[in-house]
Amino acid sequence: MTGPALLRARAVSRWYGRDSALVRAVDDVDLEVPAGQTLAIMGPSGCGKSTLLHLLGGLQRPTHGEIVLAGHRVDAMSERALARLRRQHIGFVFQSFHLMDELTAVENVELAALLAGRSPRRARQRALQLLDRVGLADRARHLPSALSGGQRQRVAIARAVSNEPLVVLADEPTGNLDSAATLEVLRLFEELRGAGQTLVVVTHDARIAAVADRVISMRDGAFADDSRFAVGTAGRAGTGTVYGGGR
Ligand code: ADP
Ligand code: MG
Image (cartoon, rainbow, N blue to C red; front, side, top):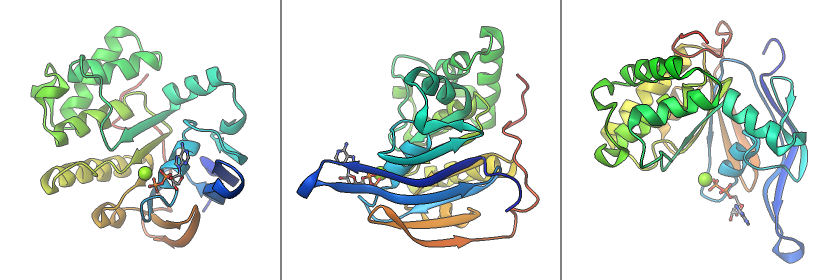
């Protein structure tokens, strides 16, 4: 690995409860994710994958340890600064999509760009471009309820990159999808990876893990196994600007 990590966790723990009910959901984890890397995190249910992803993205705070994203101390920020960091520099993809039901596909995508500070005109333009890139140009005015699961997740991926995030964090993005829809999402992740997007994806799907540069297996809050695939990582310095599109 060359250069400083884009995302770094040092001795990070997240515990729940106390005494005999103490759960060490994430326990003393060290991690460095260089720009441009696609990292897959696998492991059985309850081993701490979601908690770790939430800690990395500032959705939860660690009990101990330090998390740094592009020089920002995620663990030590005010709620306000953290919210701004998430809006501007992080893209989230969830298993259950988390789209706004009353907004159309293009409105869902454009809202994230607006919150990141784009002008209304620019946000709309970018949202339409991104929906086109994920193959949903003809679904832009549909509500989520009129879309299939795979289509909803493609909207969610377009939304996740609409702010040109430093990192995309995805939590079992194909967990609710059938095999055909999983392949569509897999293709989009491959495209993101090819565009230099830094990507951390929690997944049970071996096909997604197979396109990652590094696969970490978790057990009981810690890293049990770690495979790095050197090919493809060295020359791909991430730009953070996915799918082109200026600011
Ligand atoms: P995974 O995503 O790998 O399934 P999680 O990160 O969701 O695992 O959970 C890790 C552990 O932390 C589990 O034992 C879970 O029950 C526990 N846990 C998660 N969230 C909470 C919470 N808010 N309060 C108490 N325990 C929690
Ligand atoms: Mg989980």
